[in-house]
Length: 168
Image (cartoon, rainbow, N blue to C red):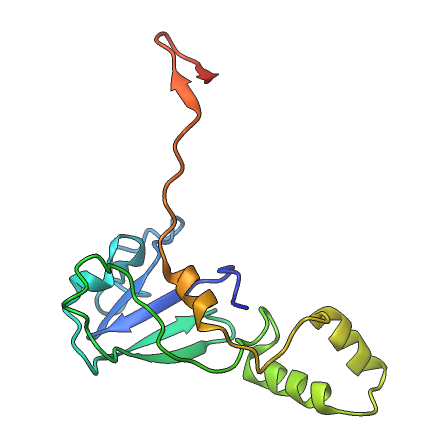
């Protein structure tokens, strides 16, 4: 379940865009030369954006396929001081497969999955898709596990004076 984070993405929150910086982009004049440049999503925490209950924002994944999602903040948990990450309270359906060809390709996949008599093209599509894909599958526990930040791993390298590194 889930995309592989293989494509660009952006959030649009309160009229500002947030996305990872493009190391090849030296455009200092704004977002594609127009407007305010996007904010660095890698350095932005949702908790710093003063979102309120019922706030909505847009998430777009894969600028070629344009998977747009409207995300609604259902509730802010003031009592949960230790909770610094978003959590999923509900959802439905699996995401479309990575690189399936936008909404039209996904609709075709759903149609092929329901067909009783599949032709050669259908069988090739299903082979590409894989046996395990279930468009109805959703597990909020898996989503919440993915939303938790990973702890940085401690380096097993020790810096040696005079240059070079040595494994512990």
